[in-house]
Image (cartoon, rainbow, N blue to C red; front, side, top):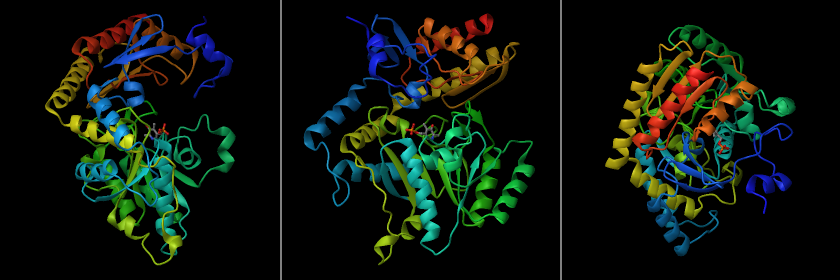
Length: 422
Ligand SMILES: *Cc1c(COP(=O)(O)O)cnc(C)c1O
């Protein structure tokens, strides 16, 4: 009998993979808490919560039980013309946690489609008023997903080349830092003046795929203020930052100016189910109310508001602010800060930073995003039973909240060893 990796090769096509040169994928047979087991029985610590999703750990019984009960009660019903308890309850429980101008919840099924819906909402918001606004504003190096609208606003475009001629109109600005704010502000003013801008989309405070790059809270607030004055809708993409990763429940809580639209996915369902949300303010929602049917938002995904996904969200919300999880969030934050103090003077360490449970270290080693040396570093961690996916020369940890102290130390030790090896 061939193993999973070998059987995989015959029929499967993986994301983000050049199959001519890529190593075979690893067959995973089991997961619990922060640990995976491969088909040989070897253990791996999930140092990135499977792309920032499984924050309460894999195989979480509490969430599984809630989903199982929901599946037995009502598995699925289309969400156009029908509603159900998990979706209603989700809106009642999630909105009080979001910035207090958020009033309505629109469901999608993944991060990119949440962004897609957000962009379409913003474009139609202006259209419904009889205004043609055709330009979107986004940060350089941002990442918002891989569907066409989301790809258009993503600044990490190294792999979007074949599609460059088919994208929406986007103007890009650098993220605000302590030392460039005046320049960014004048660039934004210039863009606003020269274009009909519909929306500004941003990953608040942390750009995930760019390599966990941080930017200034007050700087972002200034940019939001400028956009709001010009009635440019602000779309916070909290697909990565949401649900406690940056310290607060949502990164947008750090700014005075609130987003008009928010995109949520990934940890939304604790990694248990594909589901996403595009929330918005009452003002945005009201712009779609009309006696003309065509002013409504005619966008739908078959699995919108899937009851089993909603049940996972509700169970996750029970855990997010439970004493046990709050303790873990604080522990990881403190441990990260201590680890940074320990490594930041190492000659191989460039910038080392942390925010909440996110830790990132830029290595003083030249590496391409998916280059050879980067792959060696990835394999180095895998051999030590630690899953980290360096982004170029940035090594980052974003562990499940439930990671144990011993497991977290094992990740730090693997990084220390890498600093001596590479
Ligand atoms: C992952 C991610 C997306 C895309 O979500 P998918 O579910 O992969 O389509 C969009 N924005 C941010 C910030 C993300 O981290």
